[in-house]
Amino acid sequence: MSRSLVANSALLAQYQAKADAMKESCLKSGNTDLSSITGTCYYISENGDDANDGLTPATPIRTLERVNALSLQSGDAVLFRRGDMFRGTVVACSGVLYSAYGEGAKPVICASVRNYADPALWVESALPDVWRCTLPMNNVGLLTFDHDPRTVGKYDARLGWLQVGHVPDGYRHLEQAEDLDFWCDVEMQTLYLKCVGLNPGERFKQIEIAENVHAFKLWNGVGQVTIDNLHITLCGGHGVSAMWDVYGLEVRNCIFDYIGGSLWRYLIRYGNAVEIFGSCHGYHVYNNWIYQIYDTGITHQCNDCKEMDVTQENVEYHDNLIEYCFWSIEYYNQRNRFGITRNIYVHDNFCRFGGEGWGCRIRKEIPMYSFAEPAQITENYRTENNIFETASRYVYHHSYYLEPEGALSFRGNTYLVHAGCDFALWGKDNVIPLSGAADFLEKVLREKDYTLITVE
Image (cartoon, rainbow, N blue to C red; front, side, top):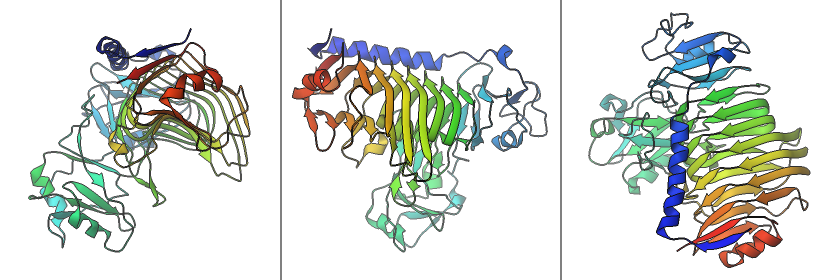
């Protein structure tokens, strides 16, 4: 039975308790049972040595560069020691588990390769209070100041803001910019930072720089990868990026934060927590805590690939807490040579505060759950028992072309909507106001057993 309510403090407290319980479920997830590992286990710790064999906790290796050089085989496991932090990017191999060992906080994979709070790394430019980093920088998307990447649950880390401009001497935009705004010359790989009063390396104890890299990369044809019990942070691209034709990717029990913001093809900023771009056959994302992502929490997508067919099938997202993202969940399979989307199950996720994150500062038309445009064939796409709490504009967004009736199904979702917000943008220019939400849910989405809550 569907119902409509007006929120009060007690009701909102219930949903906050639900979010807190989901955080705890992710934070306290236990280590993988290694009896299921059929291959070799490799151990990595901060106090390891890359000259070690890595085959026992007593002989761990130390760096991600050494991890990427291992001759990994299907059935192997790469285990990072809890409480430690590892800087760089992991290139994933087929059939391998990437997870944690030991006790304590989840191991951190931090794509920022060092602490840049060193006065020797910054020199004055020709502009007052504008400093140039002396190291080459690859398309920087995000800077944090006095923020330890190991920190969990800090929604308000002090950030720099990218001033986008593609003109000669583009750093001159910073002359009138705010304190801690920055600009990166992509072609010259040069970073400029507005920092009033002091050399940045003197003003701050810690500066982290997220360049245009992914924390985890899966290339074409890589399959049966599991990413488990890690804290993934501070990359300008994606937290997990899988490309083109991916089989059996599972991402579980992970924390993702402060990800994205780099430029894609010099035109737009991007960056998702977990993404497959292209075909996927088995894609399972669950029990993750995802917050403060520039673009999207979880997505399967592909567009404008005229030379290939794209099939996205057997996808399941569930029990994820997704907060302070531009989009919480995004899907599209559009304008490819031929597209098929089938057997997609999105359920029991809690999506909160859509459009209120760091990446939403100047972006408009913000939905929490975007369907964009459909494939030529869409079958059995189910959205059930999710909670969507207070998007800054829309809960749902769908572009001009819609799937045939019945291809998308909805059941048992809960919607908490600000009284001043619209509910959906569904089809070309078809804005659904909150006053029309119940009618839309029942007659267009044909949703059963929904709960619609107005938040004053």
